[in-house]
Every structure is written in structure tokens, then in C-alpha cells.
Amino acid sequence: MQKTNTKKEYLLLLLGAVITAVLCGGVGALFAHTLKFANGVFGQYNWLVYILPLGGLLTVLLFKVLKVEKQNIHTVFSAVKNGGKSPVLLSVAVFVGTAITQFLGGSAGKEGAALQIGSGIASPIANALKLKDEKLKILLLCGMTAMFSSVFTVPLTALAFGLEIIYISRKFYLKAVLPLTVSSFGAFMVAKLLGIHPERFGLPTLPKFNAILVLKVIALIVACSVVTMLFCLALHFVADLFKKLFKNAYLRIAVGGVLIIGLTLLVGNNDYNGGGMHIIENVLKTGTVCYLAFAFKIIFTAITNASGFKGGEIVPALFVGATLGAAVGTLLGISPTFSAAVGMVVLFGGATKCTVAAFMLGLEFFGIGGAGYFALAAVLSRILTFNIGLYTEKKTKKRLD
Image 1 (cartoon, one colour):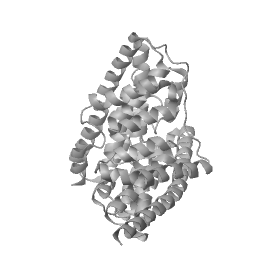
Image 2 (spheres, one colour):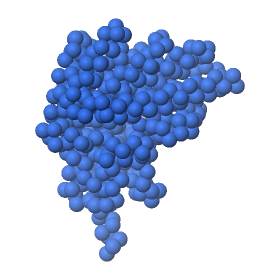
Image 3 (tube, helix red, strand yellow):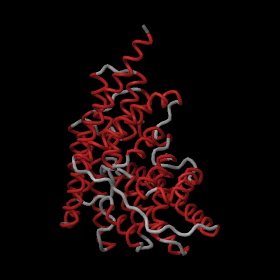
Image 4 (tube, helix red, strand yellow):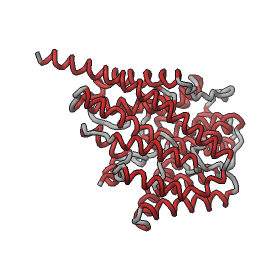
């Protein structure tokens, strides 16, 4: 009888994974189209940055009205670890809040929002199917994986990310592999049917392999790993500083918006507003880059994140990786486009602590030709950045308190 019940529960879990894949694929496509439209509008009317503080005030008000002002990405991680519920209204608030950030030129990505939206979609499905304990945790993780896959169009990376981002136990992940695979690839296919085209860059001819090139690539990885730590520490430090200086959430986000306006005027362009995918694409296509672009992006992102604007940090991290990689590669005398690709893998792996996902990201974005270099970048970035990352346990607990 016990085995029969267990099989029935697992089949219900797989059914939940299918439903989650379909819903997250659809919502993910809508989310991706919305953000693409938002970035397009801002690119055409960049004076919108002047009303960023107002957008921030509306964001804070929205979260308070929906009573999710104390919820964030770490709440979602906690729900998966402890088998709790993920607030559905948080998904709504994060969707709208991220769109506001992108429309008005805040420096943020989309993955943090995607993870929160995905878990919010999966939570009521788990409740309807009466999934509990381990099965509930797996389905919440399915929601996160499905949204990541549909928004970033990288199903293998999303699958690995879901299996790596929160460690529970080996036994748990053996049971989770099939549902996560269903949710990741299912959501990817649904999003693709709804007009989300996979983001694939490809690389020009790879540098000819030799010992000197390997040493140069290692030097590149070391430089990018150091900046990865600086990126993560800057985000944590500025967030803590803003909370100490500005206790009121409305004041905090208004100040952050004003600072972003000032920084935009200071640099004289809009390269560091929004996620910055257009800059990444240009670097990978032409190899041309501003040598301080990575530093400007860190500053813009740290202030946007610290002040309370919604979005994520992974796309900005990829921006930092691409621009820093191209700059360092140029100095080392190796292809800047190749170096940008390696830099993106380093920043993703070091910031998230997801080694396999970082390797998969390299393969899905750039193809199998650079597999050896991407593996080296993924492994060394995890080692060289120690325990400093975007979602470290210490920071997770601190922000949940």
C-alpha cells in the first residue's frame, strides 16, 4: 500500500511538473516580451530615466498594497528548503515591479524576478494536487526552473541551475531530476511556440590551442573571478548601507532613482541602464568595449538593487563578464569576443556558485567548440571566488531575518 501511494504521489508530481511547464512557459513568454518592449521603449525615449524615482515609489506602494514588501528571492529559497508556500501575489508584484524598472532605466536583469514568479505559479499547483514535504519542494523548484528556462531560453542551464542553486540532499535531487527536466524543457518549448527566440551568440574561429593560450585564459579567469567577488560584495555592501542610511522604503528607492539619474548624466549615455543585453551582443559581435564599462555596470546595478528596484543580478553579471572579458582579452592579446564569452561563464558561475550550470550556459550560448575553456572557467571561478556569491547562505539568512 505504501509503495502504491508513493507511486501515485510521484505521478501527481510529474503531472504538476507538466502543468507548471505550460503555465510558466506562457507567463515566461509574456514576461520576456514585456521586458523586451520595456527596453525598446526606454531605448527610444531615454528621458524616461527622469521619472525613475516616481516609478520606484509606485513599486514600493504596489508591494505594500499586496502585502509582500518583506518577501524576496531569499523567501523563495527558504520555501524550497523548508517546504513552505511561495506567495502568489509576490509573482504579480515582481512582474510589474521589474517591468517598471526596465521601462524607466534601472540597472537590473530578470532572473531574480523569474525565479520568484515561477515559485509563485508552482505553489498553488502543489496545493491543488495536495503535494507535501519533499514533493512540494520539488514542484516549487520546478516552477523556478521552468521560468528560468522560458525567460533565458537555456533549458540545460536552467535544469542544472535548479539542481545546484539550493542543496538539500543527493536523494532529493535523484527524485527531482525527471520533474525538473520536464518543467525546464516543457517551458522552453512553450515559450518558443509563443515567439521567444533562443538567445544564441556563437563564436568566431577559436584561438589556436597552445600552452601560452591556456596560461592567458587562466589569467583571464583569475581577473574575472576577482571582479566577481567585487561585484557580489558591492551589491551586499551597498544594500546594507542603504538600509542603514534610509530606513524608510519610499525614501530609499527615491534616493536610488535620483542617483541613477545623476550617474546616467555623468557617463553621458544609457549603456548602463536596463539589463544591457544590447551591449553584450555588441561586444560579442565586434569585440569593442569601454575598458571601464564593467565598473560602471557594477555601480549602477548595486544602487538599483540596494534602493529596492526589482529585477535580478545575473544579466548585469553577464554584462560585467562580457565587458571585462573583452577588455582583459585585448590586453592579453587574445580574441576579445572569445574572452568575453569566457568572462560571462566566469561571472555566472562565480556569482551563483552553480558550476555545471555555468558550463551549460557556455555551451548553450556559444556552442560546443569552446567546451574545454568553459569547463575550466566554470570550475576555477567556483574555486577562486570562495564562498562569496549572490545567494550565499549567510546573506540569505540575514535578509530573511
